[in-house]
Length: 368
Image (tube, rainbow, N blue to C red; front, side, top):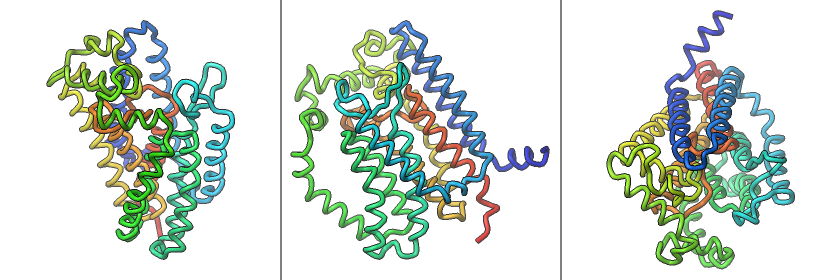
């Protein structure tokens, strides 16, 4: 037992784990300020409980062999897609947010796509690993792309374009890391440009307005542009050091919508300023650096690709969420990892970290 503990503590990446904990604490403090005007401690209690549960999950997953997932990738893939199909049939959210993304059971609700991200990363890592020697053969690549397209299409049907973009990004990152030739990315880019008119006319009015607001914030000040404008006002008013926690005008007086989750970076910008935002980015840099370093050191392609997928997923979440708050990205329902309020996304990210730590602990002992 003592030998196991010693070996565990020696190989456990405390820097990666520490960066996650600091991000969670950072988020808890900002959520406390963001929800102060609600005069309801439910948000803080739920987030704190979720963090505690997430830490237990991290240690549990770090202590087991991630290679068990290799044998289960097909069942994981099937269950992931069945969840997405189920949310299309039984899900809620379209009446309030224009997309059917959630399961609701009494007062409890969760977003299946957050869980499915993990399943698809695992499944994609295995199918790419199985075909890595022939990945640049058109038929093999087509098989992989068809495998990847099923969950993306199901998410687009919700419709949830922001989450679909996340899936697309981490899948592209995994293919790039596996050695897919650059010409294929060039073909994909050309195809995407050609398809833009078709994509535009397939969008509903809500999505079109979000894009128009992104391109021209004055397009519809009273409705579509309201979130984007209020977020930029909040971030800009924070200047270098911010107005101070619990002192943000946009945050505390209700001008900023979805301030505890989608637009939480606007709260950070207003109340903690540029310094607070940069501190957050430093923590994310440490987190992503440790993940990429582990991926590089892992001799197992399956394990390495899982971490690449996790890193890409977290990175695009950070980019999209911060981009929404400062006007660089259209407004979508993408949370800020480990910081935004939300049990499903936080637990899913904790699971990812637990798997990454397990891979890191096994990387030296693998034989091929």
